[in-house]
Image (cartoon, rainbow, N blue to C red):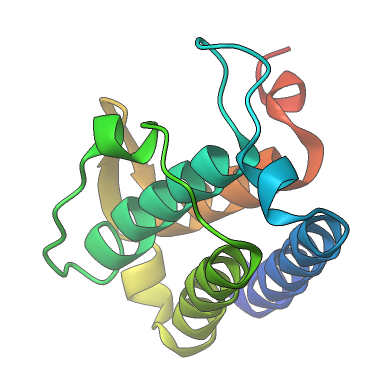
Length: 142
């Protein structure tokens, strides 16, 4: 496998996704970021918290083997976060992904982890996550 090419592609993709999310968040005020169309829908801030949980679980726990406590239900509870808080989450979590991809060994990147009851390598999980964030779920479920 061409890990260097894949690393560069993943780093570029995560940087691009971070830039696009930050640009979108910059265009909205705190009320818009926390607005929900109805009780069963999620706000942008809730979705960013959910992305944060996914990144922590897949990268910090799955690849770096560090303990985390993830509360998926709490991620999707209505919580008011301002624009600065959301931008910090985006900046920090994507930086963890980028730094991990830059520094991790090929062997560690190729280790298996359990993702939704399926065994995947850290590399495969990172590629899937990058594609999902960039192009949406329809790309992966056709």
